[in-house]
Image (cartoon, rainbow, N blue to C red; front, side, top):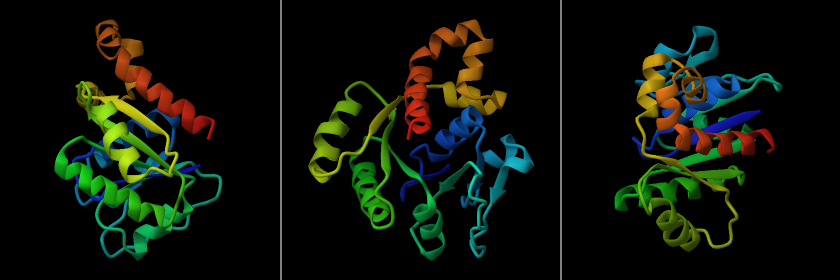
Length: 196
């Protein structure tokens, strides 16, 4: 399976989502971000960084891969988007982010209709606002699956421990309690991907 995680706007949590999914599902990651924490966390055999003048490689059909893509959609970036089984667009609820996220979805739709939206770093009311006031307004005819990931320190722990959130809660009883909700939210996303 091939998954692209994309948003034109930085800071939407693309790499954190990519990392947790890669660690949880045992996927490899290819990133075009200039600076990424992923290269320090994922083993060299499971991570590839694409430089700005480098083309994306042809991927073996049965390889499970996550493309962690930033920047504008250009000729290079359209290839992984077109080849992906699913494109995930994370979005954070602020006025500027919402406008760019809507634009991101519209650009992706030109190349791939299999889009999942994640309201990321969600605080109270963000998910409902994004679903009812942004997504339904701008995409009334689309039936995108929409998921929520709460605002959490779990990603910091994931980076520090180099472990998926599900593995962190398995080994640390205190964090199991603190991260039970975000772990459940990721489990919903993982179940959707596994059944896609």
